[in-house]
Length: 175
Image 1 (spheres, rainbow, N blue to C red):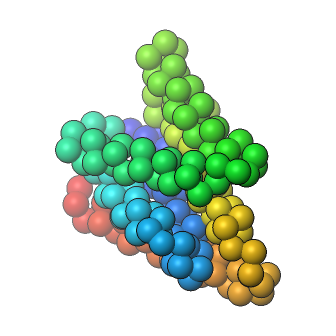
Image 2 (cartoon, one colour; image 1 turned 120 degrees about the vertical axis):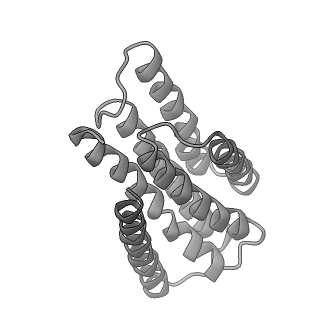
């Protein structure tokens, strides 16, 4: 793996691992069936990005198709749950914009595995989807407490950090 790719690929894995934040919030507030899809997305996304690192940017096609299918499901649930919220629609609509910009960076400008290119845009895609999925909890459920939500968000962050470090250990032992 090149020096630059050793930084960029874990960056995408890190932002994917932080998808544990909306997962924890949705499980706690019982946003069913969204939390099931979010949990699957978290695990498949981590698997996809581990595979992406191990294959030097050429992930297994079956994992890639499954990851994209789960992403489409997540997008559908975001639209279903947040269809009456301008903020949710605005935040979630940035994900396909970042994806299109990522493809343009790769195809037209040949900027691949670069933090200011495709990898950075892909990480922004993760962050916008994670933000929209988290905000849905507060939009759907107006019976929440800031103290409990802070604990849930911090717990999700620490679980995400644990998943990231565990994934990096798996990557190191698999190489």
